[in-house]
Length: 297
Figure 1 (cartoon, rainbow, N blue to C red):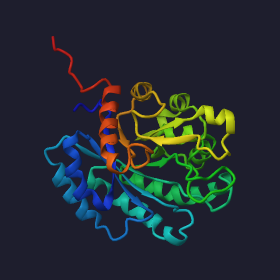
Figure 2: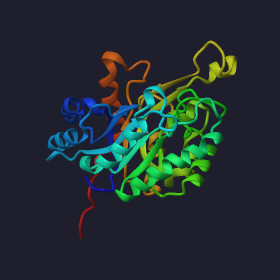
Figure 3: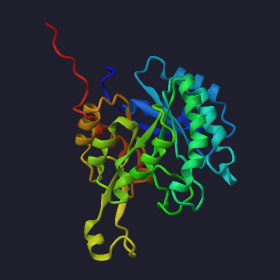
């Protein structure tokens, strides 16, 4: 695969990677993002990296990202190890061949997003220096985790106005976004114009879409009893992924789109991998199919 190609992959829990990745490679996934929830725990990252590289040896498959999703700004409760886990992943990323470490920014609990910026600057100013020293980039997923501008428990990086504040506070080229259209669509933000504006700060893309029930919104609004939006696997939602991939390519993006599964209301449980493999093949078709070299003169 040429390095100009955008790879299509999926997310795998870091603790299960050794067992799961060999089962997924035959389906045609081209990259894997390894994720941890709040902490890397007792995982021996050096050992997992070595075993992962042995699995991927002679395969045209890469580890695209390492991620830990918790609140590193408070370190409270189950997030006590989240900041240390960011540090561990930054230190071990090169062993996986992963150029990116990702996760939530965290936020000060039940404070406004802008009130969390000084703590973000303190924590991620240091993490950005650590990443820069190791040639690693940091990417923040754009998920609200149910938070708003006024209050929440998890993440600053779910609104473009907050991105402006973040990147002004830590003006490092080593921090950017782990973007997906779904989280913006849940907030009724149009993802395509946003992508055009922010493509230079997008380091990794999650393959997750959404379906918006505009008829429900027109009848009941967004605070009624009826659901108005669902997270979807690509190929089943409203987004034009051909446009997304075109914008990414025009912006010089050479990373991956890693499917974030286990959210679709239809293709779930026993149909999870049926949906993911459909999404894999759908995204490959949206990028134009397999890479074909030009004829030589």
